[in-house]
Image (cartoon, rainbow, N blue to C red):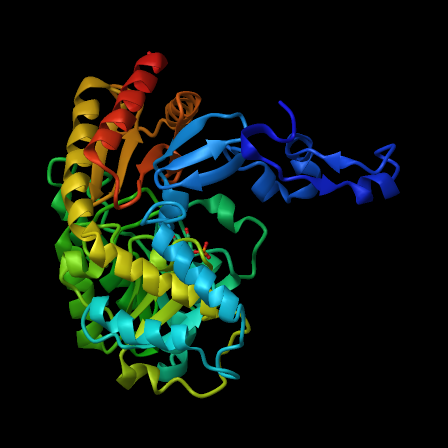
Length: 459
Ligand SMILES: Cc1ncc(COP(=O)(O)O)c(C=O)c1O
């Protein structure tokens, strides 16, 4: 297929190759050729990720491959494009802002879009969160959240959970405990961070009484607060209300209630990392509202601006205004184009009734996944909230023994049939399904047909 395949006129002058003598003449290098040598240009952590599907464009639920095929996107770039790829309202808002001004460092100059976003967010955030620090990513929102907690409390300790994924920067990577591989070679980590077990119903030590996972987790937390780190030394407990990368694990509501109680009683700040679960993914604006628990600080990113880089630390004024001036800052954070895209994203979710769609079609999708579980012994669990759903692959007949090989084969089979999903869980043995919030029943049916065929192909 030539360089113009699938509308892919992404050609570059191979001047570097020419200079280096690896190319005999200065001529356009095709996208296909670039794809072939990606392993020499992109760090292995990117070049060897799965599946590295070369695409030439995207619209709504669909990705358009360089191979000329259309792919159903059931991962939404990790829950980023919640209103679908390239939603016209988001693109129009970003374009309008780009024509006015692309960048201006917030704090040095002010922009209407950053203020509009700051004025709009309190309408959708849980409880009293009404003041913001804007950054560029989820990791930065997490870093900002723990820096805020330590700065205002002057305490060093942070408690996080096993299975958590909070990002790749040093503080966020220290908090992360979803896969040991993410921590290889990073020692020494940021100090003062402790991990306790998460409330994971499917992996509870009492499979017949999954809700007992709450006691298992909370008891460990209480032991840690007695034996490991005194509550007076703990700035915050940080938790994903639904674990994302850790396996799309939905804890019983009571878990978050108990965390809230402990934090309030012991004067510890409660941080929710809603980077993946936010902006409508669960059928409410945030998982906090789905569970009815209010954090003191919230980290958000991903779905906030439909793909334009943006993240935010959110807190109530009483707390946020105690963050000492100049202790934290940014060059790109709160970029005017990203903020304009964010306002348009929020308005789109409202105007198109996408929370309701995520609730209704999320239930429908979960029921369809449960049906698949009934007919395929490789699936040990089907779970989720809203359109944040997953299937966990096990060794058939075993006691929940992870089956990463089956998950991987399933993903490859599905991809070959034109559907993209992505693994999660400690061994990559779960598959997350997170379509855009405007996915239709027909599209879910089409996706489930592919999933069923792919499972049959594994037999
Ligand atoms: C819950 C959670 N927190 C933080 C992050 C890090 O976000 P980013 O990759 O934008 O830095 C992620 C990314 O997957 C996430 O899922």
